[in-house]
Image (cartoon, rainbow, N blue to C red; front, side, top):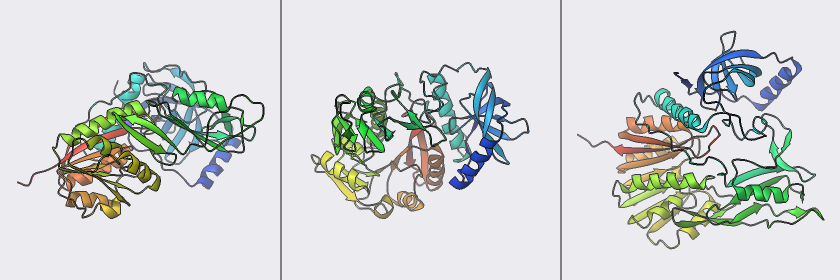
Length: 424
């Protein structure tokens, strides 16, 4: 079966307009439409045609299926819908093991066999590279999946009601959904959830972060407990520690750290291998965070320079990199510090937010003497856009390696390697 992959997704509309349409749709009887699904979109939804010919994006459906779907968003050029009945299932369909799937919006792909999830996500990356990046034959490797794609998430944010119930908001609504177990969350997260469920008071949000290799648990904020409601868990910690690739890292509550430790180790190992293959003397780790890549590179590179704007992450990096005298930290934005940076880098690592690289950063990389660029991306669309700019500016795309950091969800992480084209 040939699967059409649709790279684009509908643009978000202003909240007020979205609320008005939801209210209008809620007042109308929802007549399901029958849809033949032939494609897959970069949002975890299958794609087909509505009876009137408009493109339709369908949640909880797969390419190759025939489904009945209720319309949840009605636009002049497209329709969004949710599956209510599967009339012909695709070979890769499975029963979602989570009781909350479809209500909780955290997972989009539990109804797909894991091997099929990897295939669909890889195809999305290929289509983004083709359509947005204009790479007709991109050097794209198969996605690196997990041996066990459950119980991996080391960070969860919960909503807490006044009565102490803990959960999430239902997908697409403002209704509270109590959660007693999250199947993609690390066991220590679920253990903490069970301990606090129905026992907390005077907080609206709850964050639980755990160190998979250390056993550390950080629960924020400091909780108050209802009298006589069982044991209390420690809370209000400001940091926790985790190990990655043999190095130990302190992570603050507001600092970013990958939520999948096992896959983060594989991603980091791939990045380090690509950097060291270029035999660099100076490596710049832009968007350096708590110092993950810098700490792993430090034993092998003469000079590593990190750039990080976040104060919390910078404080963590100061601790995590203290033992490495040849690692230099610069505090500030990559946009301000990378142009004309000294010492000049042989290799640059970038791990930007979802919006990708700002034009000034692309220009700074092109104008630098860097021989290799290793680009870590959490959005294939902005990655494809930036890769085209970099290739047009004098780099060659060596390879793109997708890594499944978020099984059962729509999210996709990639590592791209580019080399400077030698002047002829």
